[in-house]
Image (cartoon, rainbow, N blue to C red; front, side):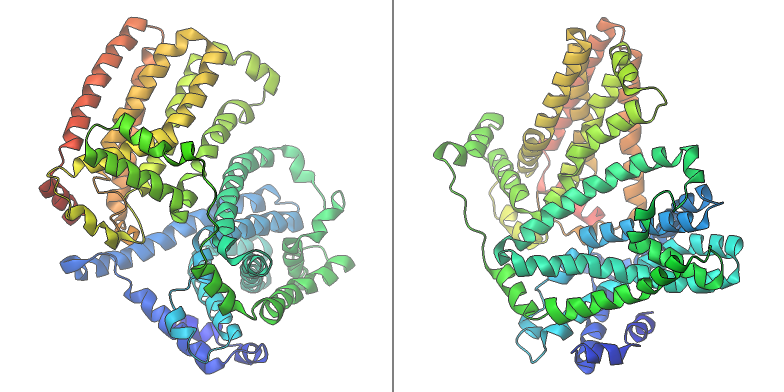
Length: 563
C-alpha cells in the first residue's frame, strides 16, 4: 500500500522538480517516513509482537468509521436533490470543513515537527524539498482517511447523476484535498513568517482549540438549519456570494459532463477549481517555504519570554496542594498534574474545548432543538425540573476529558522518578492528580453551572446540586479507578489502542452516569429520598476513594500489563 501511495505522489515529479525540490531526496525522505509509520510500536516490551494483528484490525475499523462518517455527508445531497449545484456545494463545503479540522487538530504537528532536524537539517537538503516531503506525507495520511469517507457519496453520485459524474468525482475530491492541505499549511507558514518563532506553537494551539469549538457548534446547528423546508428551493441566483467559495468552483466542475446546469459564469469558475490548488502549491513553495528549516529550528529552540508573575500568584497551586492534600505524596501528584497540564499543548487541545461543549449542547437540547420561540422556552424553563439535572450531570464531561489524558505524555519516560520514590502507595500520587483535575477544571465549571441553576430554579435545587456533585465524583472516580489507574503523565498515548476495551469502557461510563441520573430524576420531587441517595453516594464515594488511594505497586503493574 505504501509503495502504491508513494508512486502516486511522485507521479508529478517534473512539477516538484520545477518547484525546486530534489526528486531523489524527496523520494528517499518519503520512503523512510512511510517505513517508520509502519514500524511505530503499539505497545512495549514482550507484548509488542502480539499487537501486529490487532493493529491491522484497527486500520480496518478506522476505515469503517470513516465510511460511516462519509454516509453522514450525504445529507446535503439528499436535501438538495432537486438542486444539484447547491447540493454539491453544501456537500463539498462540509467535506472541506471536516478535512480542515482534521488537518488543524491531528496533522499540524507533522508540518512543524522537528524530530528529524538532527538528520535532515544538517544535510544538503534544501528547504523546498523538506517542505514538500512534509506536505506529501500529510497528503498520504489524508488519502487513507478521505478514500473511505468519499465512497458513500461516490456511489450516490453514480446512482443519481450517472457514470460520467462518477468518473469526474475522484478528480474533484483530489482537488478538494489539495485545497484543504495548502490552506492550512499556508496559514501556518505565514504565521512562521510574521510571528515570533517562540510563540508559533502556542498560537497554533489556541487556533486548534478555537476551531474545535466552532466545529462542535456547527455540528449541532447545521442539522437544525438544514431541516428548514425552504432550503430545498434555494437557488444560487438568490445568493450570488456563494460563487466566491472554492467549493462552488469544485461543484461547477460537474458542468463539464452536463450533470449540473451549464452557466457561462460557472464554466469559468470551474477552471479556478483546477488553477487555484496549483497556485496555492506554487505560492507556498515559492514564497513561504524558503528559510522553512531555519524558522522551525527557532520555534523549537527559543523559549517564550517568561511572564512576570506576582509573588502571590506564583504559590497559588502550592497553597491549593496544601489545602486539599494531607500526605506529601498526594501534594506531589497534585503539583505535577497542575503544572504539567498548564505546559502541555496536547493536553490543552484535548481538554480546553470541553468547557464550551457543555453550554453549546445545553443550548441545543433546550433552546435550538425546538420549534418554540426562545422567549417562550426561557419563560417555561423554571417549570422543568429535569432540565437542570441534565445540565449538572453534563459537567462531568470536562472531568472525563481531563482524566482521560492526565495519564498520557510524549515525555512518558520521565515517569521513572515515580519508581524511585520511597512510597508504598502510588495511589496517593494518583489521588493528588485527581484532586488537581477536580480543582482546576471541574470545580470552576460546576460552580458556574450551580449558580445558574440556583438563579433559575431557586434554593430548592440546592440539595440536587449537592447530590449531583457527589454522584459525578463517584462516577468519575470509578472511571479513574478502573480505566485510568496509572500514574500521571506516565504512559504513551499510542498504547491506548484497544478498540474493544475502549468501547466497553465508554458504554459502561454512559451506563453508570445514566443509572445515577435516572435515579436522581426519579427522586427529584422527594427530598427525603434525595437525602437518602446522598448518604448512600457519599458512603460509596468514601469506599472507592479509600480503595483508589491504597493502590500498591503490584496493583499498578497489573494494570500496566493489562494495558
